[in-house]
Image (cartoon, rainbow, N blue to C red; front, side, top):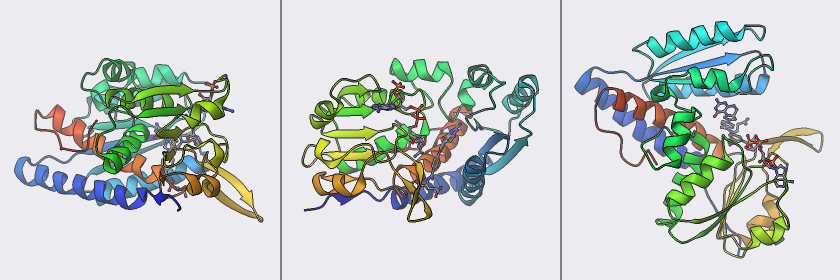
Length: 296
Ligand SMILES: NC(=O)C1=CN([C@@H]2O[C@H](COP(=O)(O)OP(=O)(O)OC[C@H]3O[C@@H](n4cnc5c(N)ncnc54)[C@H](OP(=O)(O)O)[C@@H]3O)[C@@H](O)[C@H]2O)C=CC1
Ligand SMILES: Nc1nc(=O)c2c([nH]1)NC[C@@H]1CN(c3ccc(C(=O)N[C@@H](CCC(=O)O)C(=O)O)cc3)C=[N+]21
């Protein structure tokens, strides 16, 4: 028996549909249009693809999209000045500064400059602290997308053994916080973990966010476990450039109960959750009820 394939692309389209309905209602009943500003510094081609697709989907759900492209040589002070203007702009409810930033800038300085209530990435230390203490936060889009897929599949996650591989601030750590919030027993593994295979074999839920192509083989997976593959790795296969995840899909799909593919799994959920977060930020800033089922 092969694993059930979790269709993140279809689920993301459903999320965007629910966002679009809520946006239409905001417009009709309150004359409010949620706005998302995306800031891209430099010319990284992969980042440009994401920014373009974010802009397109933002407009598709009826939101206003503001794109700011800055030269890679821009100073940190100039970027901070732009962030200040977006913070003050009432038409902007969400601000995303695409990472990584050029090396001459401090990412933490830039993220800290964003109004935490407009921080739709959930990277500001206020939101990190709010999430960690169980307060209303803006939650990072990729882990939020993974959580939505897991809740949809399992209903309650209470009591499940979850292993998150990776401890980055943007994926691993917030993912662990969210799973803890849903009452999983959470283990966070990383590059210094001893006997990673044994750790992963205990898991009912495996979230792989490592950045190493096809690192997790099927014989690490407990039969029937759910595998969420966050990895986006570009590799050459038969002379072609293809995307693969952090798990070895073919062998894991033989053992797992359910698995996300790459592409078409977590990636599309990230963008859908960015739009959901922008809607949530807009509702909160206007004192209106939040969308249901689109927050943690
Ligand atoms: N689908 C999506 O929307 C998104 C996908 N991604 C993808 O997710 C992946 C992870 O991203 P990100 O969290 O930013 O990556 P980082 O490089 O910031 O973090 C990687 C983590 O993996 C750990 N790690 C590295 N090697 C090993 C190993 N051999 N065994 C166990 N753990 C290891 C590192 O450990 P240590 O801390 O000890 O160094 C680190 O904690 C990437 O492929 C990225 O492209 C990222 C964001 C969004
Ligand atoms: N401030 C900030 N916030 C981010 O959320 C952020 C960022 N910076 N920097 C880069 C990473 C990466 N990221 C992805 C989003 C969507 C897909 C996605 O939709 N992937 C498609 C495939 C796309 C393709 O074919 O290239 C899929 O998996 O099906 C992937 C990766 C967001 N990131």
